[in-house]
Length: 222
Picture 1: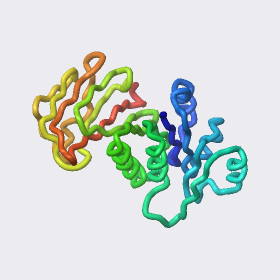
Picture 2: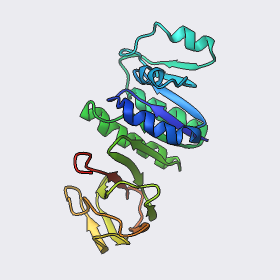
Picture 3: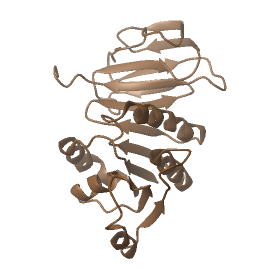
Picture 4: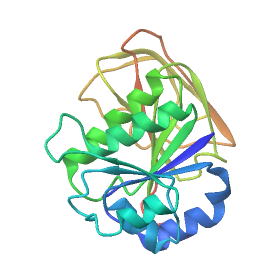
């Protein structure tokens, strides 16, 4: 089971069409989040689940979706979590990994919250990614391998999610490390690059030990 979440940040139609032409068959379930429903409509996607307070998209067409078999979770505008967080929690119930489109390019507070929502999936033992034209963002709390096939953009950066990450070893990267401690506020691990097909990332574990991994490109220069 793999879920696609289309949320309500900025909508890059050209990128979304290109991405889905290559990946649409990989998804078993689609969740549209508030104005993500408008984006899904433009992409010709009928979601399996609609989540949100619908303060942006509105509710005029919700009855039609219900008649065609979609589930709808209508949230109150005043609540303790974001629409996107609720969508992530619903995706976790399905038991599979997830990708989130249209989470970037809008309000910075929502973007930061969405990155933190990835931790909910990670704690559930699932992989979740935020994807846009220039970035793939995910979290890791244990050693892992990065391959060029899954992270094909030029740069790979590492930022602490919370607290220090100790014992970082980077192998197969342009700028290797051997036992480095990455502290909050440091930009030491920004803009690294893979040398060949893959690289390994090792670090000391711990309950709160977590890295934000960002595979990115500079659209203007590439």
